[in-house]
Image 1 (spheres, helix red, strand yellow):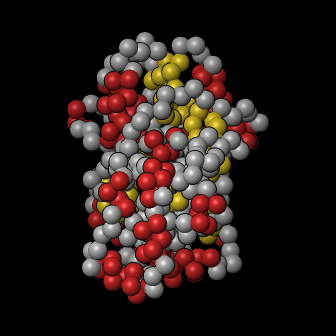
Image 2 (cartoon, rainbow, N blue to C red):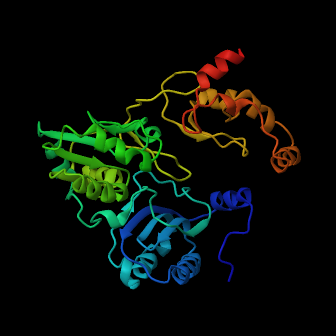
Image 3 (cartoon, rainbow, N blue to C red):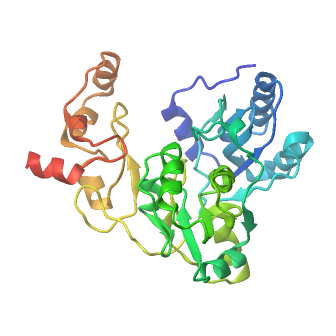
Length: 348
């Protein structure tokens, strides 16, 4: 059986949007020692494909990290399948807050060195000595403690569109970069109550153990992350202390937790929380673009990319194959920090 996708993404996306059934978007992770991961990868791909599961699943010797969508009519079969694998039995599922079923259009199962790139030497500390897991209600109560310090363990482009009130938002591009940054930010606060949160909880598992290794004693983490926090808040009628949108790593690029818009369009500066990838497939830059700029710029980041996507598809493919580069990206501070407003102003 074919163990990887062989179809063009446009074909797959068209097929996805023509589906007449509902899909459930979910995520799960577990740190657990896995043996024979090459064989496990083949088994997961084959069995997930049989259930028409789409998504992105990373496995490593240290465990599994999965974000995927499952046809509603196969959801119970999928739950049973996961529970029949001893290492993953009863793993909690985090169900998407906003879900139109269009989060993924193909299946990817990849073997990685780590399920989250953290840059840490796991042999140097006890990765199982994690912080205290808090429910949404316990988290809200902990946030009211004057001795508490709330830390966002996500990247800057995630916290830009939504975060917990009064949280410290490290200006980091990657989790690997953020870990030593957080230790430095908190070096005078080792006597404080540390509250960590991330999207689904996986980054906090490693971060809390690392902070305990660095001498922090009262380390706590939001169990299930923002995704499960939003579910619990709704189910239990709790006050939400998260404002804005929760960035997610799939086709949706975000789930609204509240209607607050705390970020701006990277092209005009007007209020917007709409992350997009540049429509030029040779660029695919992630940035925030309002609806008006999206229409004006054809979903692109710069006029040069607009020129490229305006070409016939055959010409675009030739440019990509020929490795022809344009000058637009030379103004980016980094792929994650484009100064598009300055670039467009200079061009005008």
